[in-house]
Image 1 (cartoon, one colour):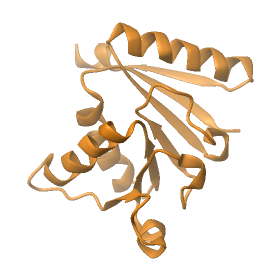
Image 2: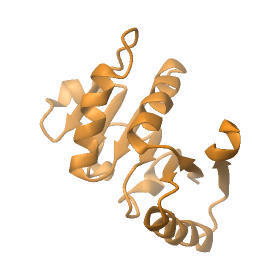
Image 3: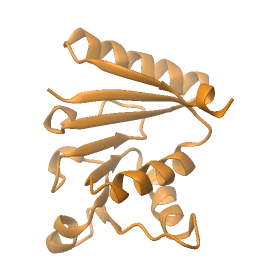
Length: 144
């Protein structure tokens, strides 16, 4: 069964996702990131520039050749079910990610924005009603 974790109170989704992806790739994980196209575009640009010392190999789907998708440790896509690997899924979007149950782990990134929190609560209820164990990480508490 998919492990589900909510990372609440992220100061901003793109910046937090960059740090999360750096850590995940550094540990050898393959990650699929999903969300709205505009947000994935912001993340794509940020992954090239978020630090002068790091480069996180990644690609966008659709658009990348199949060989590049398969070799990339990070895939950005609006349709995670079709992703080439299913180890970790990071949801930056507000909807329930299609095919999340095919991944080993799901990480939901949630900001302090009230609308984002409300939609996250709906997703939490969905996972809980289906028997998923949910882990809660309060990022605001970690900063203090």
